[in-house]
Amino acid sequence: MAKHAGVARHPWNWGLATCKEILEAGGKLPTAIDLHKKLVAEVKSQNPGYYEVSKCSPQEALRHLNKAFKRVGQVNGTGFPKFKKKNLKESFYLEGSIKVSGDWVKLPRIGWVKSHEQLPLVHPKTSL
Image (cartoon, rainbow, N blue to C red; front, top):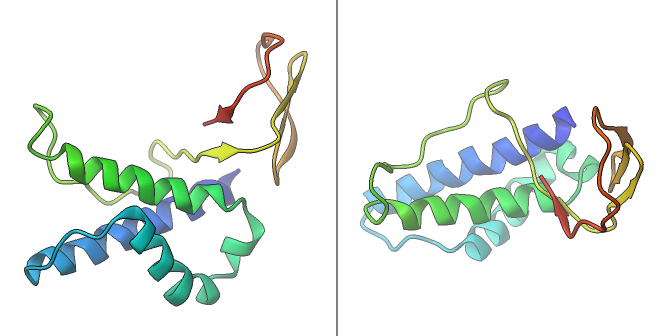
């Protein structure tokens, strides 16, 4: 799970640095899709960790970054997005074939994980 969190943190920080450069040069803010295409073309081949985790982690990190930029100035109390640090509120996003069985959850690319509480018998659409 630490790899998933690290791979989610890296595109956020890379995307934030890229957006800052573009905005300082007077350009238009790129969309999450544009950032993801650029990430795959430039960064993914240099970082083998991207191939060991789910593709959802970097994609959703860039989508969340795009949402954070849209909230600047619109939602009271939000400022410019900040860089993420290791071991500080690490999180990642997964979707796909998630299964629940009692207090066990099967996550894609991770496997079965034991929960500390009994989970409801529902089929989750996504996991965080």
